[in-house]
Amino acid sequence: MQKRPCVAVVLAAGNGKRMGGPVAKQFLEVNGKPLIFYALDTMETSKVIDQVVLVVPEESIEYVKKEILEKYSLNKVVRVVAGGKERYDSVRNALRFIEKDTYIFIHDGARALVSEEILKRGLEQVEVCGACVAAVPVKDTIKRVDQDGFAVETPERSTLWTVQTPQVFAGEIIKEAYEALPETANVTDDAGVVEWYGNAKVKMYLGDYTNLKVTTPEDMILMKSFLKK
Image (tube, rainbow, N blue to C red; front, side, top):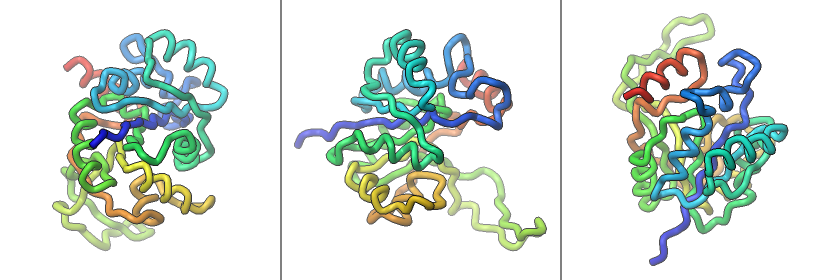
């Protein structure tokens, strides 16, 4: 049986407002290279990923092609796509260029420290269940509160996971879910699209606590610390 191609959708179309400063966070330099380089480099050297579709702000497409893809010989990136207004718009734009008979790894470019092991575990799980998400068990007690900030519920911690990326799907599952997604949907990740509008259960598989999303200056400090190790 022939292996399905594995295509990574790397999302780097946000403006990174919480990071502050005039430069979008995906282009900030970390150890002399732009933040987005690190996730792309992992995909480039991966034995799991065959191709990459990169999503960036429309005005940055030519810059990314010349100053990142060509400069660092990131040859697995077969297409650079303009992002949309919301995250799900960006994913939808990318999915148009990917066939159904694939496994699709949707990954936030700001999770710069994704590893080959995480990619391997994602492939192992998607081959079995068709839809899975990198995640880690929560370490802290979680409280659900009312509008005034008073605790109303303490969910059982053993049932709670913090969701990461990549989120991995058989092509037909994620594409059909996105085709059913309304234009005014209120979803924050691809697993949510499949949960609400798809026809598959989404399984959590073990990510890594170092697979953090760089959102604030404090996250950048943590990432640099992990890189040193």
